[in-house]
Image 1 (tube, helix red, strand yellow):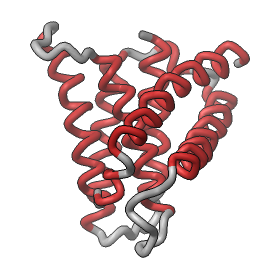
Image 2 (cartoon, helix red, strand yellow):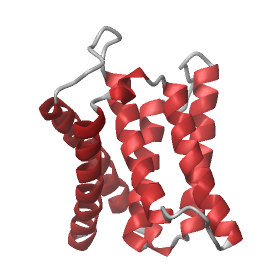
Image 3 (cartoon, rainbow, N blue to C red):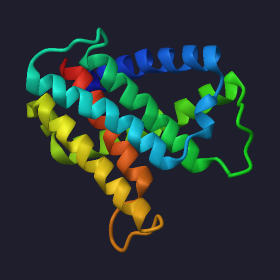
Length: 176
């Protein structure tokens, strides 16, 4: 588990660096995104990964790893957006963004640690294709929850699905 924690932290460190640099360049323009738009951004990235996996080739330079990193960062955006009140400012200070990012990835890491305890790191035997398919399935679940006005009868909510997607993308990057 110590190795997994280190690998997890390395992946997140790279994603955080990209996130903060983009927030420095663009501000928090992503604050205008609604949940469905975030889901669609993650979908585009997951679908591109799936297409590259199926075709065995790509024409745009950003590879599969870059897309998984984007998925992680959009999940963090989604989690932050779910938490912030509707009247929160669109532009957030870099320090606040960094603190929110850290809070969300620590929540995801704690979930990963709990699931690894129970599942025995079964993800290490999974294929990259399975992670992609599971991400696409979780996105479909979020879409269904949104069409149900955010309500579920027995299932986890949008936040839990974002956390799972984030962790699947981290696992994929660790295995890459």
